[in-house]
Image 1 (cartoon, rainbow, N blue to C red):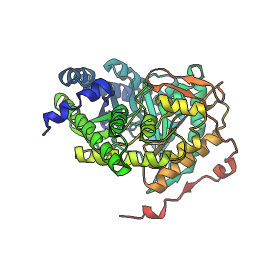
Image 2 (cartoon, rainbow, N blue to C red; image 1 turned 60 degrees about the horizontal axis):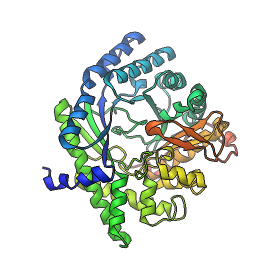
Image 3 (cartoon, one colour; image 1 turned 90 degrees about the horizontal axis):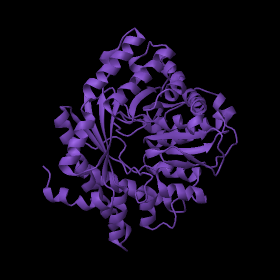
Image 4 (cartoon, helix red, strand yellow; image 1 turned 180 degrees about the vertical axis):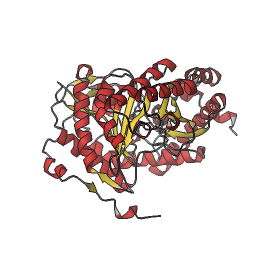
Length: 452
């Protein structure tokens, strides 16, 4: 049951501190759409998405009106396409991406996730074909998001996939060069990818999920910043308590919305993901939280420790508020989507190396980072391998969304517009890992993976 006073207490959070439901994401299984004919498969996928999600946007608007809680996005995630279209040709895969895009436009959502593959232990014919199709798929659609899981703590790292994804990132950048290489902003490479993440670009509908499901992502960096500011000069233990209590209240709002959407759409409630996801708006910044905690500038000494404390407190507060917390649930640090992180990167305080260190203690990884367009595929693969290894060794989700913006150089700005924001092109060490990468094969799973 929900205490009315808990809900009423959030009014000022919504009005003054930018609390919102970042996304209601409907997961839809596509396994029953399988067909040997590529054209029929694409049409079945389109029809099923539209049939199940046709009222998603309308329902979100109704809930907004009833509770006064802003719901920023309504989205859809589907079964990884490589699992559904294993026999499709490359052209068939691209046509499926276009069917996904058409369905997204029809139901009025801005992104649809699931154009992806799970290759942590090796490639199937279908996963290989899908990966090869990603540059064309993302350059010929507007709303399709793609993700590829290349590693897990249980299986180790598929370095052949890491190498190929570095090349795919470069090819996608070239294919969308006329729009700041924006295709790469819709492509994420994972380790330990969760099945129930409602946030793009990594959302997909996992194999163990029900036929359809509602997952909700809540965000409130401004709310947490304000709570810390009000707490004043307390010690870190007391500050952690403040963050926990704030996360609890935010998660309760998310659960209320999730339950309401579930009932109205007659779709099972899955999880609430409490991820402090920033936006380009001033005051809606994870970097701002860290500086409110006492750092002079995010990216300087102490940033990793402050972020670790924040992430832990957010998770503890969320778990107390809902029995179904999942997805990623933590603090995101996407550079282009956080106004203060953009500023710190421009100042040179925040480097890619420092961001990599911070990803060891947060969700999710090196996210929405623009790098010079002439960065080699080998260097990109090396960065992917470094970040993915953090996830594998620490048994956590990590991911990479690098954007080698064609024609841009260090210090310039790439503007993607809307939620994706704008990114300063950051410097990247260019010494080549090519010889290491050419060895291929798999990096074995760590010893602590041997648990059952």
